[in-house]
Length: 165
Image (cartoon, rainbow, N blue to C red):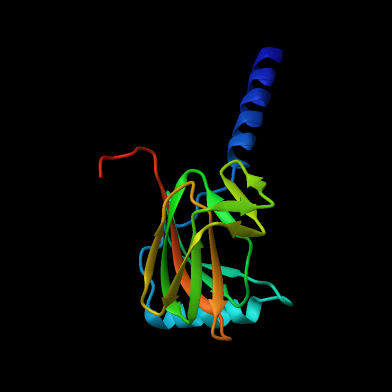
């Protein structure tokens, strides 16, 4: 009887541990232009103080996730060690700096670094309708210009293998 009780207890512990893991994001593969407009308004309303970036989820199909990024001010520079990042400008104008070296580099998590700025990077002016692809391991920073926020759709693209160009 003790063995059965012990076995049941161990099994229940494993089952509880397995269920405690976070659920993957729900699959969402379509969003209308009206919903995107609503997310822009939500991001603007959700901004607290002088927060430089507010992100809202748009689409999700693991391991991919598209975000709406509302950027009214200069946010820290970033470097993603395992992902490339695709950016599409929905609204506004800005400069996207890529390359160079992160200034005051710090580790955010196992896959990402940040810095206060970028030294020696290339600045690309962008506006509505422009695309930018930032390769993995590349410092990048978005700077709104023109006195208004820049709104982007971004998608991190895992890069498990390299291919010939």
